[in-house]
Length: 66
Image (cartoon, rainbow, N blue to C red; front, side, top):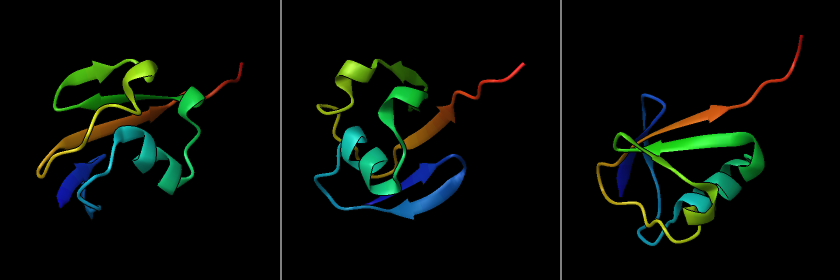
């Protein structure tokens, strides 16, 4: 299945959830916000939201500093 992640096409497995994708990319779930097809997802939903062919994801990391 193909999806667009932060503007770049990516091939992922059929049964991939948002949580599984973040884990595979080595992205800690606690430090990001994920938008799927224009909808911001709550972290609690990451394990249950299955990705579909053609989904568009934006993953934004929090950066601290001052």
